Amino acid sequence: MLTEPASCHVDLAAGTMGGAGGRYQKRLSDLTGLYLDADAHRDLVTRTGDAVVYDVGDFRPSAAAGDMIFGLTRMSPGLVGEEFFLTRGHIHAKADRPEIYYGQAGQGLMQLESPEGETRIVEIGPQTICYVPPFWIHRSINTGEGDFVMMFAYPADAGQDYGIIERSGGMRHRVLRGEGGGWRLAENAAYRPRTPSEVQALMGAAA
Ligand SMILES: O=P(O)(O)OC[C@H]1O[C@H](O)[C@H](O)[C@@H](O)[C@@H]1O
Ligand SMILES: [Fe+2]
Image (cartoon, protein in one colour):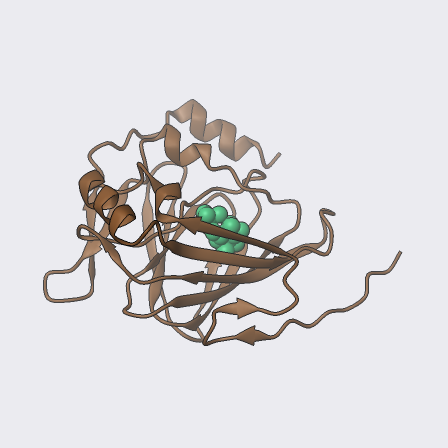
């Protein structure tokens, strides 16, 4: 059976996408344990009344393997201690599925980590397209002063695995405020690299 075509209007100022069927929000308290400075995190939860820090609206035509999910993410600007606001981050449950992000407003970056623990950073502003290749863990970070808004699209059967980041004690690097503005990377001291067999299990999931 044919699916009807659709169009969804992006409201840049609001950071929302019209026609979105699914919608979810994350509050600061949903991100407990992700930031280096746990005290600063707790204080900020209290001071902001546990503010919403990002929301996602998406359009899911179906879950069929050849179909596509797309939507819009809006992230608030801010710092927890010296660390920029981030999304939880994930690898796709079907790890060989890719994703595209398209910057709409604000400034930020995509932090990517390979199964073996290599980090890549893609800076994203309005009209930057970021390609997240198969097998890369990815997390979005708002390094700007206003809302960071991106459109995204990924295969409908990709799914999200959040456990991969928990099991390794976080991502290998943290994105902190730079000395003279901008951002810098710092090693995450709690990071535990994946073993060769864990890497193999991930990569083998493609077969
Ligand atoms: O899922 P998170 O890591 O919390 O990130 C928030 C969202 O980021 C992107 O927009 C992804 O395409 C979404 O699928 C994801 O839900
Ligand atoms: Fe993703």
